[in-house]
Image 1: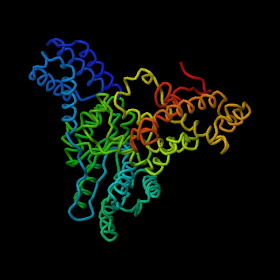
Image 2: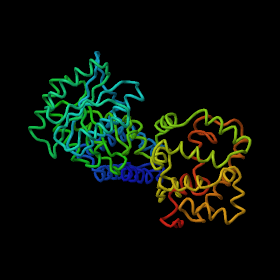
Image 3: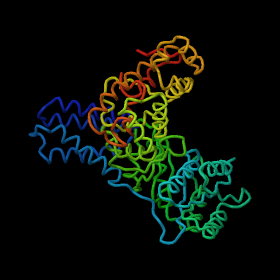
Length: 477
């Protein structure tokens, strides 16, 4: 996410770093580059202008021109202003003093309200241990009710769905009664959308708000629509007095215009972002962490949280013991690979690591999670004995041919995985003698240390295997 904006900003900072002390002309040129980067990222023009003006004022006001660390100070100022622009701190969901808390999900058709309603319900259930009730109040879109019921079944959350013969207003009213009787903590109402903002849509939503006295009115908008998303947010806010915004498809937004503009224009904080299609692909919005990602400094806190939620600590300790004894096998490797996959798409994980975009070997890397599935297929095609003793495969061409055939890959893929696995075992053996490693994160075999175990991590950076092969398994040059 934010690839275009991030690359342009880092390019502007790189020019400053090469200057040593900065002249006033250097600062002016940097401001032009930053403004151009924001506009190209589809940030609202008024937001871009105000943002650059504030940076220029602070940069000159702090007399950074005479400082040897002037470039670093400019980066810090930009980081601070990005955090300010996006809301300073995380905006949490409002909670009613008396259950249930009512969350009204609104937005245009196609923004992803139904899926986002289910994602939010799952988030509340698993991370806050709440009991949510999903309410199907979209009686106009074909199969909207069926979709919400199917999603509710997937995540184990009850869905209140009287059907299409009942008005959305009545559905909302009876849903509240149902929630009180059932002891639910949250009521999440999935409302209908339109292709554009119109009076009938707003009138219906206003009535539902009045009936339920909603504690949260969350606007769901597609981050990839850029300035259009900001315009939609402004219209909804004028009519409904939104309490927050949820951005969907942020993982596919290389520009970032909506995320940077929506709060400045509407005054509504971004509360959650969707970063994928799966139901677990929902993140609370942290302005400071997002600013860090935009400036190429990674987001270690989010990475740690993903690791803690996905990685089995007991399995980590067992694996560490094996590494110390040099008993690491393909079974262990497969277990690590599966834990890494639980954390989300590999390109997103790499994007959370500080400075990853500056590693030359990874700048043109196309990380494809399907290639991780290929590695998994190769390992699963090995016999139990072969996983424990990979040298059996290395010494036998017939074994390699059988494994390639069984996994639907090529012998060269099997050969490369064997070489990389052996490289990794040697490195882990060296690391095991360097004292006790950190548990969970950063140490060999644990949490983020598991990234070191990804195929290709010994040659060309994490995930090189995943990004280094084409359709026929040939290494891309």
